Image (tube, rainbow over all chains, first blue to last red; front, side, top):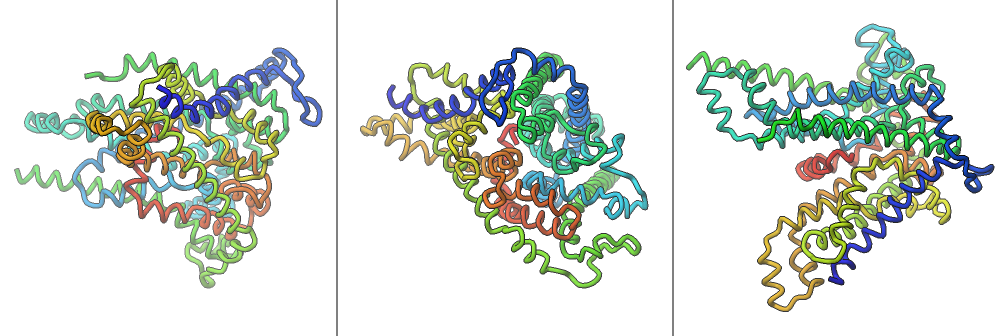
Length: 283
Length: 280
């Protein structure tokens, strides 16, 4: 009995200091104003919330974050699923393809974003030069959010694909053999066997990716210069949080933004849990 | 039957074409990164004519220049120390807690494990401000300890290792118990070695996560001498954003070591990251 408590003690003490205390402290700080020179907290009640909810940039950045997710999640999932189905067939070079697609997962997003920023460069970038265009990929407010989303998709395909391959391996081969005998085409097999039997995996990926996409920060931070005119239409809610809490030193306002984000994520999670019962095929 | 075979082969060719195109899309950014790193600035921003390959010689010395001028030795050292301590701390605390949650009985077990699960569901951004204030109060800004701090323990790792320990057969431990081994001996000599694969997954996941993290090092290590590769790149971009070959050489230096390790230990990497449950 003593052993058990002793073994979990380091982890539990750590979680309390590093996570549970900070959780409540952030909530407390969202009701406070940081004093001058970063000294002390002055209780101000719901003032931060009034300011955050009244600011149009809050809603804009929340919308920007959702827009990013609307690109990253569906495209990242569908492309990954197609690739996973291909790689589950007996074709040559599976491990080479897998290695290549998974590559972005081991690269620092800071570096990835720098490279893409260079690819997107209006004057000298590879993309504009190859297609002989002059598109302002990251400085046109109407396009920049799509460009950022493309980096997100490119970065996450390999990860989603590996999870899909794992899910596909669990589908018994007999289903496909039976379908072959019945003469069902590959596409019909895909929609009638693969899609429903894979739905638990798909749901898991979609759920984790939605939450991941809603907390996006690195790509916006690295790709968008502070002077970029498209920044207000691209910056995510975590980006805004970082700016207020750590660049401007307004911890109370930053804490409030992060609470807004967490509440938003909780609502989305709740909706997803409800949807899970309807959408996922259970054996 | 011949027709069916031919159709199967055609299908395979189409799949290969799509896979090759996708591979190309995945690799072009890497190729362009390295090719730009080998050019002069004039070549990199030359549009007419537009050079794909370096035209006036391959400037390998760009790597040496950026290595010296941005002090990559320090960045590598800081990143390695961060990874080392995060991995050691995570594996150590998680294997102990995972063993207790998976195999032992003790009061409050259910409640404490619920706390572990709750931590996994909360977005990590909510912890950052107080974590920063704690590090700052301890006067640990710009130190390795400050970098490691949020990763001293891991709820996810505890969960992962608990699952690992639960999956081990019961009789092993019972036999050792009859032989008179106490809990500590059973854990160290019998059970822990058997969860090696979970530990490796956790180690790889922790290492890659620490390597990729950008926001935390930017917050606690603002000094160029104390920061990591990721945050160092952000600093460089802020100062020398339009020196394209230099920036691409820096990006290459930042990602290359991890890519090489990944290519060697592919299988473990893919498994380790895939078990991370989307926390990356």
